[in-house]
Length: 174
Image 1 (spheres, rainbow, N blue to C red):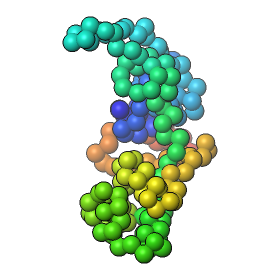
Image 2 (image 1 turned 180 degrees about the horizontal axis):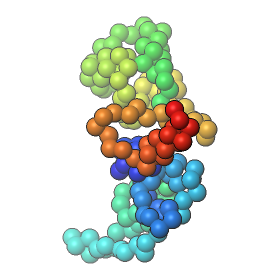
Image 3 (image 1 turned 180 degrees about the vertical axis):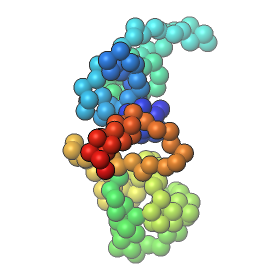
Image 4 (image 1 turned 45 degrees about the vertical axis):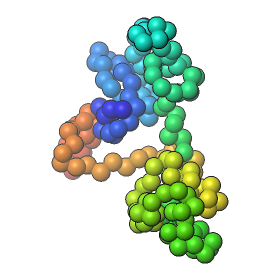
Protein backbone atom coordinates (compact mmCIF):
# COMPACT_ATOMS: atom_id res chain seq x y z
CA UNK A 1 0.00 0.00 0.00
CA UNK A 2 1.29 3.41 -0.88
CA UNK A 3 0.42 6.93 -1.94
CA UNK A 4 -0.55 7.77 -5.50
CA UNK A 5 1.74 10.56 -6.69
CA UNK A 6 -0.92 11.83 -9.10
CA UNK A 7 -4.17 12.04 -7.14
CA UNK A 8 -2.67 11.83 -3.64
CA UNK A 9 -4.84 8.87 -2.55
CA UNK A 10 -3.29 7.25 0.50
CA UNK A 11 -3.16 3.55 1.42
CA UNK A 12 -3.91 2.39 -2.13
CA UNK A 13 -2.20 -0.17 -4.30
CA UNK A 14 0.24 1.60 -6.59
CA UNK A 15 2.31 0.59 -9.56
CA UNK A 16 5.36 2.13 -11.16
CA UNK A 17 4.29 3.93 -14.30
CA UNK A 18 6.11 6.00 -16.86
CA UNK A 19 5.00 9.51 -17.78
CA UNK A 20 7.36 10.90 -20.39
CA UNK A 21 10.81 10.26 -18.97
CA UNK A 22 9.65 10.20 -15.37
CA UNK A 23 8.82 7.15 -13.26
CA UNK A 24 5.97 7.69 -10.81
CA UNK A 25 3.94 5.58 -8.39
CA UNK A 26 0.27 5.77 -9.37
CA UNK A 27 -3.01 4.01 -8.55
CA UNK A 28 -4.80 1.97 -11.22
CA UNK A 29 -7.49 4.65 -11.68
CA UNK A 30 -4.90 7.31 -12.51
CA UNK A 31 -2.95 4.92 -14.74
CA UNK A 32 -6.11 4.17 -16.73
CA UNK A 33 -7.33 7.79 -16.82
CA UNK A 34 -4.01 9.18 -17.99
CA UNK A 35 -3.10 6.23 -20.21
CA UNK A 36 0.26 5.76 -18.53
CA UNK A 37 2.68 3.03 -19.49
CA UNK A 38 3.07 0.56 -16.60
CA UNK A 39 6.69 -0.17 -15.90
CA UNK A 40 7.34 -3.90 -15.60
CA UNK A 41 10.48 -5.38 -14.18
CA UNK A 42 11.56 -9.00 -14.42
CA UNK A 43 10.19 -10.90 -11.44
CA UNK A 44 12.78 -12.73 -9.41
CA UNK A 45 11.71 -15.80 -7.50
CA UNK A 46 12.98 -15.50 -3.92
CA UNK A 47 13.59 -18.69 -2.03
CA UNK A 48 12.12 -19.38 1.40
CA UNK A 49 15.15 -20.59 3.37
CA UNK A 50 13.16 -22.68 5.85
CA UNK A 51 11.37 -24.82 3.27
CA UNK A 52 13.79 -24.49 0.34
CA UNK A 53 10.89 -24.00 -2.07
CA UNK A 54 10.40 -20.98 -4.32
CA UNK A 55 7.71 -18.49 -3.38
CA UNK A 56 5.17 -18.34 -6.16
CA UNK A 57 4.05 -15.04 -7.58
CA UNK A 58 0.60 -14.25 -8.88
CA UNK A 59 -0.18 -13.05 -12.40
CA UNK A 60 0.56 -9.43 -11.53
CA UNK A 61 4.17 -10.35 -10.76
CA UNK A 62 3.78 -9.62 -7.06
CA UNK A 63 5.36 -12.29 -4.89
CA UNK A 64 3.21 -12.40 -1.80
CA UNK A 65 -0.09 -13.46 -0.32
CA UNK A 66 -3.19 -13.62 -2.47
CA UNK A 67 -4.94 -15.74 -5.01
CA UNK A 68 -3.10 -16.63 -8.17
CA UNK A 69 -4.38 -14.70 -11.15
CA UNK A 70 -6.40 -12.19 -9.11
CA UNK A 71 -5.27 -8.61 -9.60
CA UNK A 72 -5.30 -6.77 -6.28
CA UNK A 73 -6.12 -3.49 -8.02
CA UNK A 74 -9.65 -4.76 -8.73
CA UNK A 75 -10.30 -5.69 -5.10
CA UNK A 76 -12.21 -2.45 -4.57
CA UNK A 77 -14.89 -3.19 -7.16
CA UNK A 78 -17.45 -3.28 -4.32
CA UNK A 79 -17.84 -0.53 -1.76
CA UNK A 80 -19.70 -0.08 1.51
CA UNK A 81 -23.10 1.62 1.18
CA UNK A 82 -23.12 5.19 2.39
CA UNK A 83 -26.14 4.49 4.66
CA UNK A 84 -24.66 1.32 6.21
CA UNK A 85 -25.08 2.53 9.82
CA UNK A 86 -28.79 3.20 9.42
CA UNK A 87 -29.30 -0.07 7.50
CA UNK A 88 -27.71 -2.11 10.29
CA UNK A 89 -29.80 -0.38 12.97
CA UNK A 90 -33.07 -0.79 11.05
CA UNK A 91 -32.39 -4.48 10.26
CA UNK A 92 -31.50 -5.16 13.91
CA UNK A 93 -34.67 -3.45 15.15
CA UNK A 94 -36.82 -5.37 12.62
CA UNK A 95 -35.56 -8.61 14.16
CA UNK A 96 -36.42 -7.27 17.62
CA UNK A 97 -32.83 -7.47 18.89
CA UNK A 98 -30.95 -5.01 21.01
CA UNK A 99 -27.27 -4.33 20.39
CA UNK A 100 -26.20 -6.97 22.93
CA UNK A 101 -28.25 -9.68 21.24
CA UNK A 102 -26.81 -8.85 17.82
CA UNK A 103 -23.27 -8.80 19.24
CA UNK A 104 -23.86 -12.21 20.83
CA UNK A 105 -25.18 -13.72 17.58
CA UNK A 106 -22.23 -12.27 15.65
CA UNK A 107 -19.67 -13.31 18.30
CA UNK A 108 -18.46 -9.70 18.47
CA UNK A 109 -18.20 -7.12 21.23
CA UNK A 110 -21.09 -4.71 21.83
CA UNK A 111 -18.88 -1.71 21.13
CA UNK A 112 -18.35 -2.97 17.55
CA UNK A 113 -22.13 -2.77 17.02
CA UNK A 114 -22.27 0.65 18.70
CA UNK A 115 -19.43 2.04 16.58
CA UNK A 116 -20.95 0.66 13.38
CA UNK A 117 -24.38 2.10 14.12
CA UNK A 118 -22.64 5.36 14.98
CA UNK A 119 -21.17 5.52 11.47
CA UNK A 120 -17.66 4.12 11.95
CA UNK A 121 -16.70 1.71 9.16
CA UNK A 122 -16.28 -1.87 10.41
CA UNK A 123 -13.74 -4.34 9.05
CA UNK A 124 -14.61 -6.42 5.99
CA UNK A 125 -15.02 -9.54 8.16
CA UNK A 126 -17.52 -7.76 10.42
CA UNK A 127 -19.38 -6.43 7.36
CA UNK A 128 -19.75 -10.01 6.13
CA UNK A 129 -21.11 -11.05 9.53
CA UNK A 130 -23.66 -8.22 9.46
CA UNK A 131 -24.77 -9.27 5.97
CA UNK A 132 -25.11 -12.93 6.96
CA UNK A 133 -26.78 -12.49 10.38
CA UNK A 134 -29.10 -9.59 9.45
CA UNK A 135 -29.67 -10.82 5.87
CA UNK A 136 -28.94 -7.42 4.32
CA UNK A 137 -26.59 -6.17 1.60
CA UNK A 138 -24.04 -3.63 2.78
CA UNK A 139 -21.49 -3.95 -0.03
CA UNK A 140 -22.61 -2.58 -3.40
CA UNK A 141 -20.95 -2.50 -6.82
CA UNK A 142 -18.83 0.57 -7.45
CA UNK A 143 -19.90 2.65 -10.43
CA UNK A 144 -17.22 2.84 -13.12
CA UNK A 145 -17.87 6.56 -13.47
CA UNK A 146 -17.70 7.20 -9.74
CA UNK A 147 -14.82 9.35 -8.56
CA UNK A 148 -13.53 9.43 -5.04
CA UNK A 149 -13.42 12.91 -3.61
CA UNK A 150 -10.32 13.56 -1.55
CA UNK A 151 -10.32 15.99 1.31
CA UNK A 152 -7.19 18.06 1.19
CA UNK A 153 -5.52 18.35 4.53
CA UNK A 154 -2.56 20.44 5.49
CA UNK A 155 -0.50 17.39 6.49
CA UNK A 156 -0.78 15.84 3.01
CA UNK A 157 2.07 16.73 0.66
CA UNK A 158 1.37 18.57 -2.58
CA UNK A 159 0.87 16.16 -5.51
CA UNK A 160 1.31 16.53 -9.25
CA UNK A 161 -2.49 16.71 -9.61
CA UNK A 162 -2.62 19.59 -7.10
CA UNK A 163 0.02 21.48 -9.07
CA UNK A 164 -1.83 20.81 -12.33
CA UNK A 165 -5.13 22.10 -10.88
CA UNK A 166 -3.40 25.19 -9.50
CA UNK A 167 -1.79 25.88 -12.89
CA UNK A 168 -5.21 25.60 -14.59
CA UNK A 169 -6.69 28.07 -12.09
CA UNK A 170 -3.78 30.47 -12.62
CA UNK A 171 -4.26 30.37 -16.40
CA UNK A 172 -8.01 31.07 -16.06
CA UNK A 173 -7.30 33.88 -13.65
CA UNK A 174 -9.37 32.47 -10.77
